Image (tube, rainbow, N blue to C red; front, top):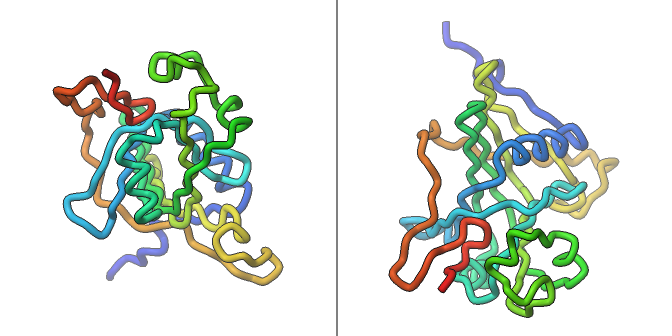
Length: 202
């Protein structure tokens, strides 16, 4: 008898989904940020997550001169892949990215590590933020062998409707079985690329 695939899937909703997303990314903040999703091979680079806010949006800090900024300006759909092999946690996020230069937000997300890449400090005009609003998000729960969908973390963000409208937006597409791979910055002759910002340090 064929097994019901729904038995191998669990859905988390609203605040529970946001809390789970925060927990997963807290365990492993480095992800692969993929752009130009309609083209193969995908353009991807390692990025350090600065924050998952209370609405479930994921924030990154980078330079306005990086390729990912240009890519997002042309097509704002992105895919994020997180892999925490020590806890066997694997997360896939598909969403819409936007670019921000809000100085107050930059100061809030500023860390001493960023000083290595932005020598002028948090007032460096080169600093740009990327905000990713999840639309489809899944993580693989290896302990229970279930693919868990983080359903409708914020209804109004994606649909413009309130939860009372009865709209349930699934945040997720299944990814292939993850491969254990050490994430390292891509080496280029022009300089060293930062995992934190996706920026090449000269």
